[in-house]
Length: 343
Image (cartoon, rainbow, N blue to C red; front, top):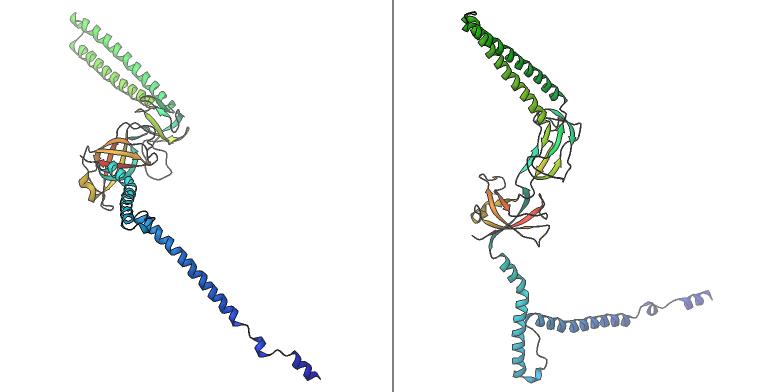
């Protein structure tokens, strides 16, 4: 009884097998869809290539030679128009650059950057400008502590006054002795002694005058003025800071400069030119300068300086192009493109 029930529950091997017809049907359907898609896309790609390369194809193939001729003329005119449109920018660029023999990038610099330094060791008492301020020639920009030098000037003034008094006393003495000699009261020796004493006093007066002038010069040097008309590029010290005219080594010593100033109306472009291009450049050659920050602006220039020595490591020579009539759009240390024009 149990054996019969087990046989009834048993699955036959034929029922275990999956139907293969449905699987292969799906594969064939997918291949058919792919082939149809390729067949549909290929004509469109061909038409696109024909439109891009040769122009619009003929619309009516039944018209024969007339339609073929029309298609040929349409293709020719369309091809010409396409060529003109594609080459128009290149022709414009060529016409804009056909007058240049070389184009190089460089950096805008000040022709002269002046760092104002003190003439002696001192302490900054006052600074009247800051970075970016305009300055004029002779304007007071920094004052150093002058208490010591004013005291020396007063001391020299006292010595000068004393020397003047000595000269006046010995002059009067020399005149009296001269009168007495004329009346045969004094000897010739007394006259010589009085004359020599007066000359010694005059020499002492001259030395005292020199000491006074030196002390006054140091007091004047405590007032530092701008040597040019320009702009303050950098403020290098602060009030109550010790400064000195030169450095004795080390990075922790006193500052050796007070301010850095430059004239922004006197600018150049510094360029490193490859040695292979040096034959295209000559002194006073006209140039066209275009700052990278403002590509729509151009400035006239000329080659103002050609370095007498090349950089062997880089194989370049430094060229400086003077900019004619620079304006506020030109900022030092920014890049600029320079076109060297045909001569």
